[in-house]
Image (cartoon, rainbow, N blue to C red; front, side):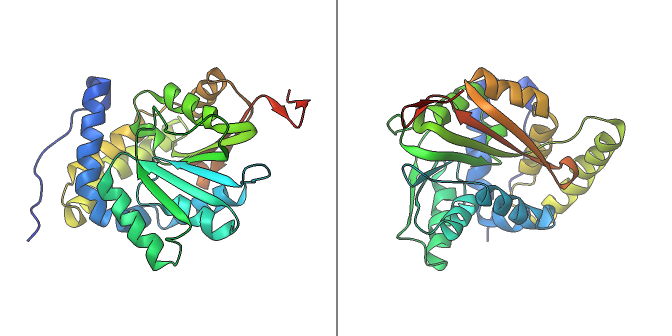
Length: 258
């Protein structure tokens, strides 16, 4: 019988970057078995629609290659592979247990031969410059303390004119949305997690990481600081989630990108 963990995690504002990385590794090494179920359940399956919306907006005119960073159990990369059938897709994550779930899922969907999953660090991607048309990430950037470096690495590995696309939870900072999130994330979600998760405290961390994620304006500024242009911010489901997109500046077929 699987043993339920009884512990608590310190607030993200009170831990060092190194401590947070260790905390994230432990969390995702304990929730992988029911991660997909709880994601779909807690979002009322809106997470499926959000990933479809993201994949639909991707284009692959030069390399025909897509990189999924912090791929987790592979939901976004599977959606990209399903929608863009001629594109080579690669996913990277630092938690092997999550990758194993993703690999099994890809096999069940008949996509195992098209999807390459590998263990690695989002802060030091093991790929050459200008290797992909698109680099994407779904619900992973909030778990990375050095967000700026992760964004720089994603920009580095896409071609000039390529896109960086970040799907992440968030909330509009006003009294109503703050109240809703406080009630849902800090009262309702922990009760659900205690029933279904072997590590209920992981969902306390989830609430904490969402509440402390930069505002859409602040995150857009981070992308600009990383050197991205043509920035777009799309609010999804009344601001429960945002899709952030940016372009790598450079040359495309000898024509300067402004």
